[in-house]
Length: 197
Image 1 (spheres, rainbow, N blue to C red):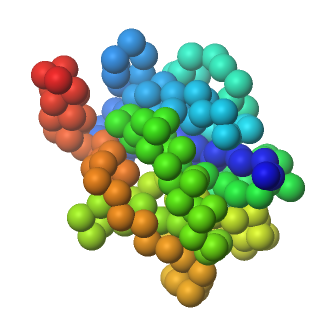
Image 2: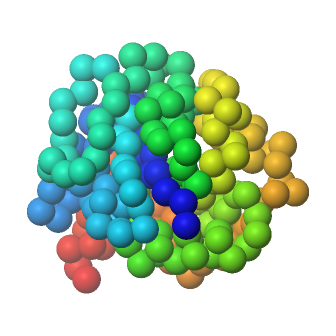
C-alpha cells in the first residue's frame, strides 16, 4: 500500500468566531490538538502536514506534524490546499483533507474512512452524516495537480463537483464529520456537551 498524507487546514481567520478558535481549550490541549490527535495517532497515516496562517503561533503540542505557513491565507482555503499538498509527499497514494476546527473526530472514524475509500474503487470519498457532506475527505494522489491548482475560498469543492463520477458519498453515523466551530456559541455548546459525557 502507498503512503497516506493528511493535510490539516488551519490558516482560517476565525472571523465568525471573533477569536483564534484553534487555540481555544479542548480537553488537555487546544481545539487544534484535538483535531490533530486522531491523524497523528493513526499508523496508516505516514505524514501530517498542518497549514497555518502567517504570524500564527503554535497552538498544538509538538509531534510528528510538519507545519507550513500560508503567507496568502487571505486568498481562502484554496491557497492553503496548495501549500499543504505542495509540501506533502508527491508520491502519496492518497490525501486526507481535514479541517483544524473539528475536534470531535476520532482515530477509529478516520481509519474507517480510509478502509472505505480503498474498498470503494473510487478516487474520492466524502463522509456523509444525515445527508450532510463532511470532512475529512479522502482523495487519491492522482488529483495532486488539480489540488495544486485550487483557488478561492471553496477549497476542493469545484474539484469534487467536476469529479462526481469518481466520488463515493459514504454514510457514517458519527456527527463528528460535520461538527466544526464556526461561532463562539457553537464552541461553548460543544465544549459543554463534551464535559457532560
